[in-house]
Image (tube, rainbow, N blue to C red; front, side, top):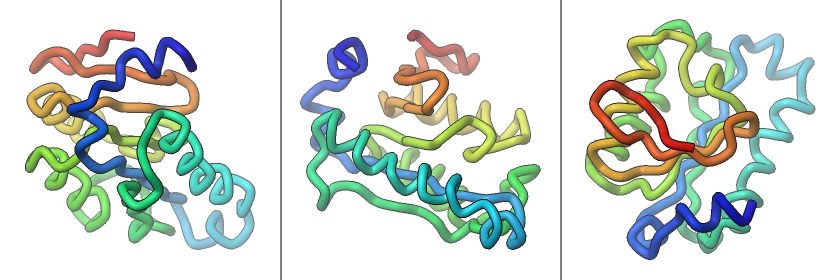
Length: 139
C-alpha cells in the first residue's frame, strides 16, 4: 500500500477517482452478489489512497453486460470519455476483466490513461501507471 501511495500525486488527487463495477450477466448480478460487494468495496481503496468520498464516482451502469466489447457498454464509454477529458486521477476495478475483456478496448483505455496521467488500480495488479502509447505500465 505504501508503494501505491507514493505514486499518487497532488495532481491525481485534484481529479476524480472512478470506480468501475460490472458483472457479465444478469444471472451473475443476482447470484454472485459477493463479487458485486467486493467491487463496490473498492471505494475504501480510493479513500485509503487519499480521495475524499465526494470525489469518488461509481460507474455501474454496465451491470449484466459482457465485457467482450465496449460498443453496448455506456458505462465503459463514459469512463473512457471522462479519462480522455482529464477528469480522472485514478480508475479502480476489481480486475482487468471487469474493465474490458477485449484487447482493443483495454489498450485504448491504457493509452488514454497514459496521455492524461491517470493511474489504474486493480486488486491483482495493485497500482499501475500507463507510460506510453504502447499501453505498457510501470508497477
